Image (cartoon, rainbow, N blue to C red; front, side):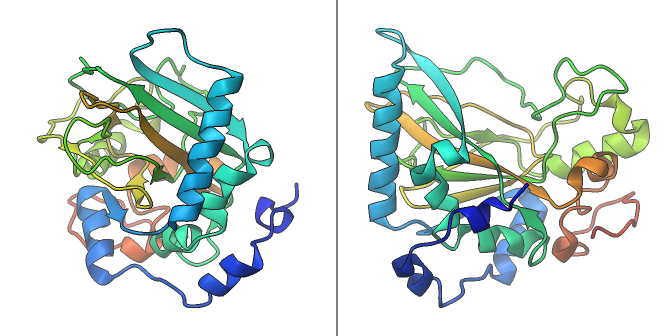
Amino acid sequence: MADPTEAMPKSRDRQAALSVKRVLTREQLEEFAERGYIVIPDVVPPDLIAAANAAVDEQLRARPPAEGHVGVVYRFQQLEEAPVLAALLRDTAAFSLAEGLTGNGALEFPETVQTALTYPPFKDAREKPHIDGGKGRKPGDPPWTFTMLAGFFLTDQSTDDTGNLFVWPGTHRDHAQLFRERGPEAFTTYPNVKLPERDMVRGRPGDMLLKHYLLGHNGGNNTGDSVRRTVYFRLRRRGHEATWGQALQDPWYDFAPLRGLVPSSGETGQQGR
């Protein structure tokens, strides 16, 4: 299959804008390693955010939610069917910033994109997090794992209860520890670990979230006046599908540049690639 990054070239204006390479700081690398997520400000320019919102408007006109709907709406598309949304990752510094966590050239460009909407007034009753891909999995079946989540804020989520994603900081390392003790085949439901206080992820339009796959998370409340809009891409390190078991047990397996940034007892010592 052809690399989607080759099939969808950047515009000349975007190429010029990216000629000055933007890189993650040491503090951002340490924060991601410690907490399992970071929010990077001003990754996407306003014109691309406006275009993405227009694309979501068109998506909703084609398939609107039920009248009076309250709560979440998730929509998935192939990238070739959503070039405007693909531009959030493709035509900005976003993809290279994500590779700052895994190593240059280490990530595959994704094939799908998710639009996540939360219609107010909505209170999420779930008190525990989850990890994507494990619920209902049977032992022996490969789970639907990936390396990290890249999220783009299309609406202002800089204050509490505006549809913010809930995350439980540091649980990416706790989950890896549990899978080292029990083996990756234990991933058939959410692993029972001691939970810290959860965070609401805050960001403004144009900011980008990068979240470790193993970090516990859940949808959040929206008690505001507008629909929360976030666009997500699920990114995989090249070769991840063959090494998902190692990635579940070693939080740095897909994140070689982060190894050694924070202490983590009981790690395998296996080197990520």
